[in-house]
Length: 171
Image (cartoon, rainbow, N blue to C red; front, top):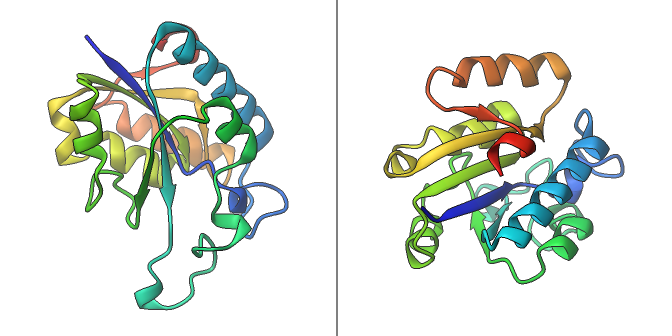
């Protein structure tokens, strides 16, 4: 079974110098780097997911195209420099993107989901209608959000639909 690692919204605006810094970003960043390293060693493709605000609805508080904040964190790009980038405009990484086509071209049957924010883009991607054709797991040690409580609430809520694993057990 072919796996892929989806790295969702590891973008500069979510880090301390960005427009919407999240909780626990440095630890999450290190864990995702480790997950990418393990994926690379096993020949598991990595796919970057990048959220860009829709310019048709005006400037957003963050992730505006062409800004440094919207760029994928340089350490994540360095960890997987050849990985394709899927651009999205909604929480669900499948909605109006080429993610499903990209996964199909790679022969993927199983996806490991990680990234930012746990309660939004991570869970919406994991439980997307389009994700139902894949075996989906969330790497809990590779996700974060606004604060620890919301992170745990979101993981508990999604746990009835998607297996929760760690980098150790899922990769």
